Each structure stands twice: as C-alpha cells, then as structure tokens.
Image 1 (spheres, helix red, strand yellow):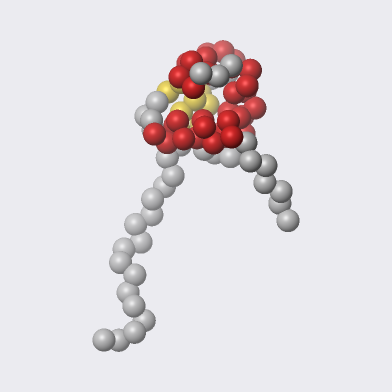
Image 2 (image 1 turned 45 degrees about the vertical axis):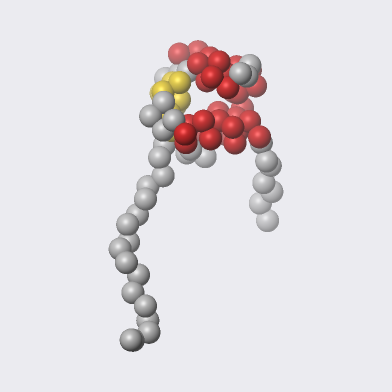
Length: 84
C-alpha cells in the first residue's frame, strides 16, 4: 500500500496553475502571487515537477514553472450494450 501525504502548499500551487493554465512563473513570482516564502515552495514545486503536474524550464532562481494540462481523450459516445 502506498502512503499518501497531504501537502496543502502543493495543493495551493496546483490550484493556482489550474486556474491560470497559461502562467509561466519563477519561484519568486509564484511566492509573491501566493503570499508565501520562496523557501516554503521549493519542496512543493519539486514534487509537482516529479509528479508531472508542472514542467520546469531552466534551473536556479531563473527557473520557470508552468502547468502541464492533462490530456483529455475524446473516446466518443459510449454505446449501450442494450438493444432498444
């Protein structure tokens, strides 16, 4: 069984990027928008990058984070097995 650790800051970052899907933010910019310290965001952003929720472009203080939008597969209309 895999243990899940709820991280409110990780959820807050995810919600920010979901609500602003075209945002490109540095850690400093995101800290300003969320009213958080950059040091507090480092671990949360690393987890979101490793979980493929966010993409990071570059490294260090100039690294830019952006949301990876989930792929929406349109499988078409599901037909009923029952015959009318």
